Length: 291
Image (cartoon, rainbow, N blue to C red; front, side):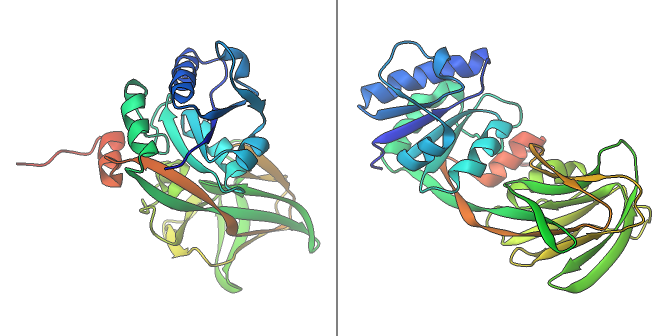
């Protein structure tokens, strides 16, 4: 691949990430790339020969962005980089690493393959969430993994109604609701008992959080649906909507939350030996073949 301008994005004040970023700097200099370094980690790099940029400028200028850290770092970068024509690959310096799949001990070999075009390319869709109050838009944000309606207080129930494309689906009394993309189906949604959705599916999972009924179950719907949540006016406390556990939007009793597909796409690059089911088996500790 003709990657001439490469962005480096990392986990600040993390010794392992800093070590990997410095190794990447040397590697990219040997390839005569124009190197853009995220401003939060620029002071951790040794030497010079790179431009210091924010995420928006990396998105505008870079052909490839390399994110060093865990899935949290990838999510933060992805919400910005998805707005641009920048391909993204991750080096895992976190815990599970469903989105950051280059091993830090094997960077040169795997990046060599990627630069030579021997890799897997895929696009993941994002969600757009809007909060309306008295039919007026109050706030909006995007999410790669999930949008979560929840209480600001621990173990507090709320009442709300859910509509899919203007069709009433259910009313519920629970701790909240998770709306997860296939990318996010192995994150918070999985912990809440939601299904795993393979990345190629054009679907969303709606996962109730501790519902006050035994009949409530997760439901999978078309990702092109508009999900609307009407928060009951009977709720006595303020609520919140979280996007990827990073961005928090305030919600008041009586508000309406609308969740649909974001027009942007995250362009992910994986090493040539990448296999989604191998990732699941490894990360979730599933068994190996019997024979």
